Amino acid sequence: MGKNDFLTPKAIANRIKAKGLQKLRWYCQMCQKQCRDENGFKCHCMSESHQRQMSIFGDNPDRFVDGYTNEFERSFLEHMKRSHRFSRIAATVVYNEYINDRHHIHMNSTEWATLTEFVKHLGKTGKCKVEETPKGWFITYIDRDSETLFKEREKANRAKKDLVEEEKQEREIKKQIERVIQSMPNAENVDGQGGEEVSRELKVESGVKIGFALGGVKKERGGESSKLVFEEVEDERKSKKAKTVGGSGGALEELMREEERKKERVNRKDYWVCEGIIVKVMSKALAEKGYYKQKGVVKKVIDKYVGEIEMLESKHVLRVDQQELETVIPQIGCLVKIVNGAYRGSNAKLLAVDTDKFCAKVQIEKGVYDGRVLKAVDYEDICKLAYIHNGKYRVLRYQYQGPGQIVSLTICIKSK
Image (cartoon, rainbow, N blue to C red; front, side, top):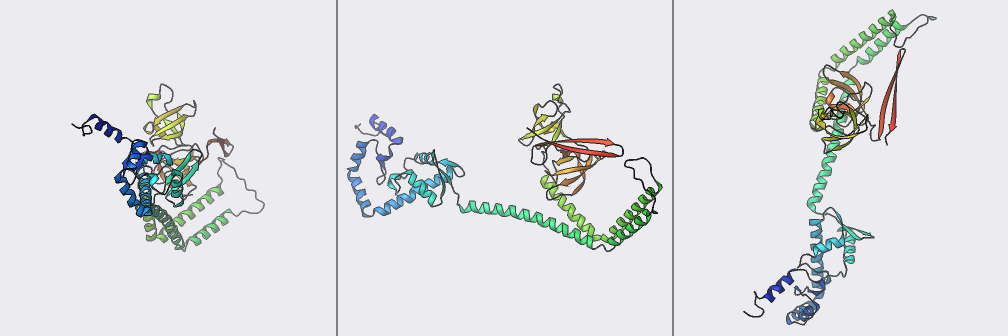
C-alpha cells in the first residue's frame, strides 16, 4: 500500500479535515477547490490547472463576475425565501446559514466586496426590506412570488365581496320594507281616524281640573274609556295592515327568516366564553372553597373554552372550563352581551324575560343592527355585561322606588 493510498491513515485524516468548513479566503472559485491553509492556497495558485482556468477568466472577466454575482444573489434570496420568508432577521445570521453549504458561491468572486454592500443592493432593488440598527443590518424578505400575490389578491377580493354582499342584503331588506309601507294606502287614514277619536274622547270643559297619579291604584272611568278607544284603534290598524300587505309581506318575512338562518349557521359555535361578562360558577368541586354558585367577571379567555374568572366578592382569580359556568340574566333594562347565535358579539338591552320558554327579548344597541329587536333569545345565548364596549368600566345599577315612580341610576367605575 502506497503512502497516499485511499485507506492510509494520512488519506483518511485529509478527508476528515476537508469535510468541515475552511477559511473563505483560501477557496478558489474558478477551480472550486478549498485549501486548508495559506501555503496550500499558494501552491494551488502556482499549479498548471489553476493557470489554465485563470487564462480562460482573463479572456472575458466581466462575464464570469456577472455570472457569479447573479448566482450568489439568486441562491441567497432562495435561502431567505425558504428559511426566513416572513421574519425580520439579521443579515449576518442569514449569511452564516448560507455559507454552511461548502460549495456555495463565494462573495469574493462577485462584484460586492462586503456584506454591507450586498445588503444595500437588496434594499435599492426592492428585493428585501433593509433596516440599519445599532445591532447591525436587518433584512426582511419581500415575497413577490406570483402564486403568493395571487392568493393574497383572492383573499382580499373574497373579504371585499362578503362585505359588499352583506351591505347589499341590508339595503335590499330596507327597500322592501319601504315598498311594503308605501303600498298601504289606508295606513295614514287609520292613524288620522284614531287620532280624531282619541281627541274627541279626551275633550273636557274649560275650567275642569284633571289630575294624573303616577303609579296610583285608582282608575277613573274616563281613563278606562280612553284605554278602550286606543285598544280598538290599535286592533283595527293591525287588521287593515295585515289585509293590505298580503303576499308581499310573506315573501319579505321569508327572506328575512332565510337571512337569520344563514347568520345562525355561521355564528353558532361550541364555545361562548368572552371577556367582560359576568358568569356563575356551577362546579361542585369548588363548593368546599365557597365558589359554588358564586358570580365573577371573565377577565381573560384561554384556548376559547377556559375562562379566567375574577370573583366579585373575594376578588380571587380562578380558571374554569365553560362547561362548569352558567350565563347570568340581569334585571330588565340592563345591558347584556349576545355570546352565541346569529348576532354573536353584539351588545343589547334586556326588554323582557319569558320564564316559561326560558328565553328573553332584547334590543341590539350600536353597530349595523342598531335598534333591532330579537323576540326570543335563549338564556344560554345572552349574558350580563360587566364592561361597557371596549373601555374597562364596571357597571353598577341602582334603583329607587318612590311613590308612583321608579328611578334607575347607572354608575360606571373605571377598573384598576
